Length: 295
Length: 334
Image (cartoon, rainbow over all chains, first blue to last red; front, side, top):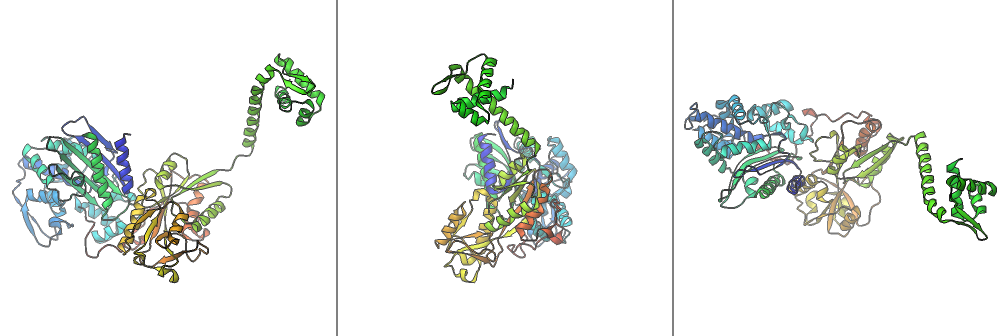
């Protein structure tokens, strides 16, 4: 194990999280670093990245128009803490703005509406096409909530989450078990491969790849990847995933001189606290260490 | 000839440098000793010692052969010891590792209960950080671990979970010392003594978070691995700490320190039993005994069934944590 890998593990231990990392220099494909990079992890909202890509390919094939309107109606749309999911009234927006809301603020209502039109089969075909055999997206946020409500035998998601927080051994819960076929799962290495395909215009058309890159650069949460590279001339694009004990971000760090690094950091905390600054810091620190070792 | 016995004669003579004393040492008479030594010299084809008026002195050859003779005799002794050990098989040894944090009274109960439960085994109880415990369990260096929660432990089998109540450790001059009760906010203005964060980072952060949540933002946090220093700092009047020692059962303690009940948020030390893949006999008797010892239950009442942990049904789950702000749907997937 290299010195950097040891330092990354120490920073995970110090934050009380079980972490996974993979980083690769996109401008120089031979250099990479990984810690548990091939271990499958439950994705939380990071699944919205392959979903966005499947949407982009649907636009490419002419099956969907990016500017067509979608109406997100309360009571029907999936609830959540952010974006349209958190709002009170009906919202009508274009598909591409729904993708923007899904990617920048992790809007659950937008994500499930997009999954409804794209379908899990198209997402699976996209993953297959890119050779991502360890990644699977069998469902959306709605399905996760249904699983939770069922597992705890309660009536609402909020109730399920409260009970989930009281469970002392999170690793034993189905919602965090990468082997459970209902969960959306990937590995750090496959996430950086997906990012690499988007950044080199191989994942979809150049126009749609540029669209995904642009919405990822509008990521609103800066505690994780962006916190590791707080330089005005460095662009950090990312997609976060957060669900109780899961804290992730996958993204790309681009320097003005052309250096660019795809980084995936997936973590699971021992504690079920909803806000854990130490875990967010550990993601930043792991990304900082990984990228520094490749520069 | 009996080479071993003759080498013993040689070693005795070399040690005593006197036939009379050597014979005494060997518990034989002198003539057979002299004859025996002569036979050994004939057998080896060298002269080993010279007799003179002063006693016995070793020849050059004798001096050279003596260490080899000692080696042979040592090996023979080892052989006999080993054989004796096979006759009466040694008691099974069970290594139990416990994460730091428990106080004296819990250890007293724990150690006694383990010895009672498996009297025919040697039970070795030591403290070790959770991370190191997992390594040792997987490598077979320990049979049973008591991990500090929260812990993300992969590959080991997780057993039952135990919560041990933490009490406040305050200077005798603290207003709460008289009543025996404090709220966490009553500790404001004091420095906090905790076991080093590196031993259990998540557990450390959790305790600090609960303190802050309930109005106790420590002046500073001092990482102290040693109980005596902790008590000393508290006795000095400027620090407070936590202990698992129950004030109702703990009689004597360092002067200047009082153990008090914490009234608002119950602070606990979360522990979880763990072992490698399966629990062999007689180690499987220990988990229920340890749980009972830590929770203050009657050992007999806890039963002897070392069933692995199962996920509690929703109805068995503890009430929701108090810190969740009502009405705010936090925790939604983001």
